[in-house]
Image 1 (cartoon, rainbow, N blue to C red):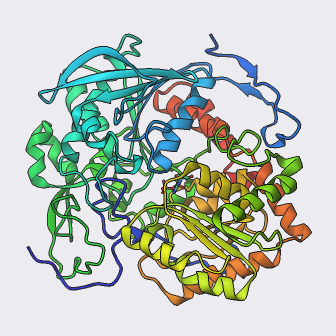
Image 2: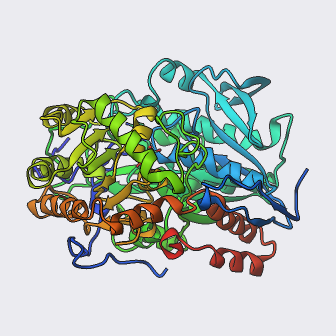
Image 3: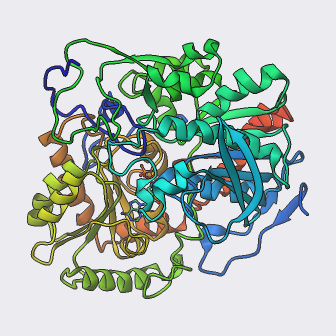
Length: 606
Ligand code: ADP
């Protein structure tokens, strides 16, 4: 098979399961906002209780960001089934798990009946065996159940999940290594999608067929396909609707065409999957993405594949993504849409709803990992104690006067880790900042982080998936660095803000919707989608220096306060999701549209 000519760094985002897309970081800005400090502001897009009204309990004085509000509940409660490969806290490799963990709880609070369906990767001690067993694709599939915070959590039981992942870390859901997915992922998630549809009607607490499914990312893309091409033509799930929500368009589920026969779908469905790309691999264990391999689509050769995400877009009733700005980006050109921009347009476009954040588990007033709990009224004292503890734990100089810059995230090109590492020396030599990195990811970046960091009491790194350390960093950092090449929504910056860390972000995707220049953070402009360029290294270093100059001033304290006071919970986004479901089910359409319009993105709120 032809390998093609070497071609720089156009090889990004090959993880989070069957990415099979090497061009992914190319979806970052086509137009680059000017670099900081901030000479030019970033582009901001134009952008049993089943009904009635209730007030949630009044929070303490220090929770000004969560004022008790009269919550108008929906007149027509819906049955909603979220289908996803991850659901926090049971399984999570990133934001997808957080969203499927948090959004359903808020929808349930609003009076809807909500179920999530995810694979059973482990022996979850809180989920009971429903004893329901179905035969799907010739295999015995079981269903486990847990009910927490009003949400039915269903787990699909089959050895292709449990036997492969049990005992491994949460990051091994899709393959043992980044860029080397399990060879049977097509089979695993084919079984999963059908089981998820059946979960709506086969379990003792049956929702029935008249539900709204929300399928998430490529792993659940067969849900809308099966509904449209298999169930509905045979008179089943006739009134069901399905939204398809994209959390990261870089991970599309591209497979070789010879996997088609095993999907058990009608031949007439094949067309919506067909997709040519320039890559001679699909990045599985058999054909891994070699981290130092440079040979990519150079010779103009194309390879016929199946693309699950493409089929998901073309068969769902509604396409959604996790921020309005990302929704604009993915249809703007093939690079940002990772070659699916035209498909989305053909499918009728895509709507963006900014993610909320789990304000229970990322909450300095309740956090059990920090030395002193704090809220908006006590943020200065609380953060000072957390900073001291973090510096001591990570071997940094214990220095309250040194602005502490934290990073938490996957060590991948998407997150701009290479750019950040190239800027660290300059940050340390030209400012009095300290820099802390927490992350896991590509082996080469893990090694580089260990090599670059840990010097002179000014830099430190933890190469682990460590929720406790993440909270310590959010609480102990003065600034949170998010130099992503692209970022569909980004939760890190919101989690940081919730702990009063001021974000310093690249101007892309949801970072534009959630961080307001000079008010809740600093923008550095958009980074090069592919390459490590000096201009970007300077942008990171200069923006950090610009932000650090403000440290200790009244202006900085105002920004920190603005960050921690925001309501970044799921409460508002859930209203928008509710309106979207109502719109799809054609109930109270006008009211639904008005409800959606009344929900502002975070930058419009502060
Ligand atoms: P993505 O989904 O692209 O990885 P997000 O910002 O949307 O990025 O979500 C990442 C989630 O994973 C956040 O909840 C963040 O706190 C968490 N996270 C990322 N890396 C780590 C780590 N090394 N340890 C603990 N939590 C992490």
